[in-house]
Amino acid sequence: MPALLLSSGVWILDIVRLQLIALALNLNLSLHIIASVSILYLLLGLLPITPGGLGIVEGGLISLLLYFGLSLASSGSFVFLERFISFGLSSLIGFLYLFYYGGSEIWKNIKLQ
View 1 (cartoon, helix red, strand yellow):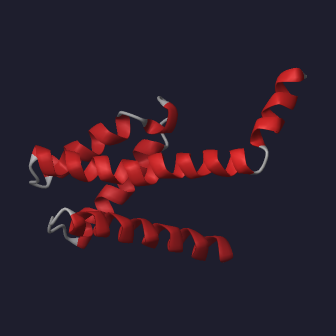
View 2 (view 1 turned 90 degrees about the horizontal axis):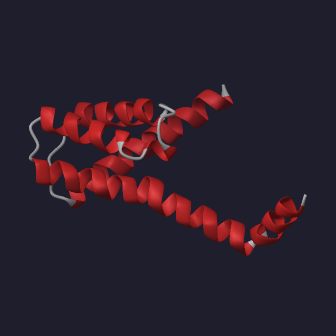
View 3 (view 1 turned 180 degrees about the vertical axis):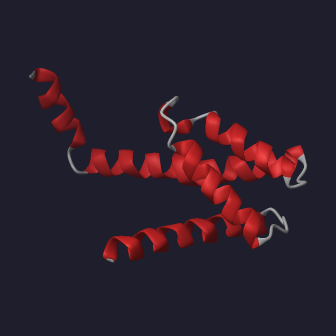
């Protein structure tokens, strides 16, 4: 039960993040479009073709948003901001966390073995 609640909470926060991005770009996206984007984002990210789904996720999400009637510029802006937040910032925060807590020392020790 705790895993189900945590998973549902993360998915709800994902939808909130997508809705806030849409509002920031002045896009009027309904909840079913946001949920569809969220589900497709998850499914495309699971494909082990490129690191982090780079390229595949963006192409799929832009195609889906074009299907729902958004312009190419709006779709591209939406996906760019979403990937910057979800992939770029999380990678940066992970790098800073690793660096701050001695990740470089761990990396050196692994390379010496």
